[in-house]
Image 1 (cartoon, rainbow, N blue to C red):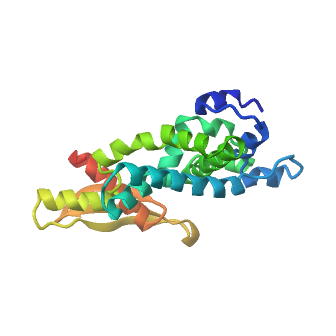
Image 2 (cartoon, one colour; image 1 turned 180 degrees about the vertical axis):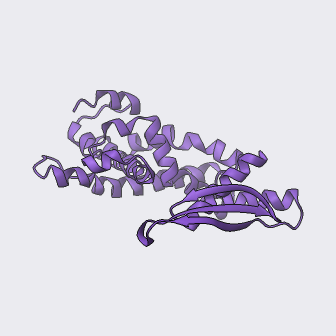
Length: 229
């Protein structure tokens, strides 16, 4: 596989191309291709996760005098799966993943986690190939650039917390209420539609594979409907 376009996108030219290749191998691919010459990316992911957290922690500590609670929340917003998958998509990592045929067809929530894991594995591969400083610069360029928006838009707050805060600011004493409107599917694969209400007014609905997931989606939709940042 020609990975030169990915090297250009991530601005890292690997000395050992196998390290870059291995960072992109999901274990499902090896189930169908057991004789492939490289292992999966899980050990790289383990390594990259630790490096990512260290780099982000060091940056926040050195650049922001805020209390621990703020720094913890900001770090969580920077290193969660949603953020890592977003950046992985920007770098078009998805185009280079080696997956099983089944995983290739799934473009939903599961793919988001696979992309996030691959991004961490890529960090691990950069560290193994070129050292901590290069991995740190890669993280700063691609992850830490998101920090100003996270702080400005309060993206470190989950949608439910933010909607409650805004609702109580706008309508004194009113706390959002979440109700299941519809659920379907077998126990191992349930789907839910949840509505979020202020008093008796239905503000928005959200669909998810758990009640919590559907509540988060409903809160996101409500924030947009109310035009509350």
